[in-house]
Amino acid sequence: MSCSSSKQQVATANLKINNPVIKDKYTGDPAALVYKDSVYLYAGHDVAPNDFNFYKMEEWLVYSSADLIHWKEHPVPLKTTDFKWAKGDAWAAQVIERNGKFYWYVTVSHATIPGKAIGIAVSDSPTGPFKDALGKALITNDMTKQVGIDWDDIDPTVFVDDDGQAYLYWGNQVCKYIKLKENMLEADGPINVVNLPNFTEAPWLHKHNDWYYLSYAYEFPEKIAYAMSKSPAGPWEYKGILNELAGNSNTNHQAIIDFKGKSYFIYHNGAIQPHGGSFRRSVCIDRLYYNPDGTMKRVVMTTEGIQE
Picture 1: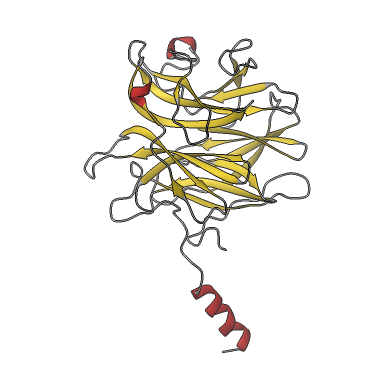
Picture 2 (picture 1 turned 90 degrees about the vertical axis):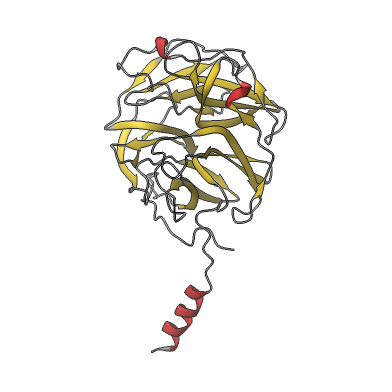
């Protein structure tokens, strides 16, 4: 064995197993916010019993980190019961900061209008506590008639462009978006539809350099694919698969951030054993890289995750 091979084996042996990043609870549908010198990780809390083969989620969790390796859990910032008009199901959600306030766009089941709905909570802190900002849903299933299902209004992603215009994308089977008013609580115009190849759900909108990226869950079981545009409202040009099937999970849900000069891909899988899987998921983080032309390189999912 050569000296270089021996050193490489020692270095590999010293790598820590940092994926999943949260190991004491099941966490799914991650979203992340970079604020000041920290990353805030928001996730749904999977609590499905081992013999229960569907999603059971009643609250969202929040963690913070200054290095993406060491995570601090904060008190539960938001539950479905905080929305008096909802009847449960803490599905995918995302937090964004604007003018010193933190707005959390969430998926829940509506109590009186059949189907999933999108609500908004607000806080003065990224770790909460959050409270219902509207007292009603922003989007309900009766507003969207593109498909005849009651779960097509899920997975909100929100983005504020450099000019101050805010956008909300969401959807299952069909991707939709609206512009938001500056107060982040009202639609500023009609609901628009975006045609994307094999769109399933989980849109995520972000910007890197001069390009806008719309990534999303593709087919089922889900990979992540993406499209690019010079505008957050499109038109979008499909660019291909970004990452493959996440291990032991039918769903795949991503957040993409830049932090301290590097790019990261945050997702979930079903890696924690013995009971991890599609309904008891775990958040992971790996590096994301861009090509010179702005396209993204395919993400390599690792057990080691982010190292020191």
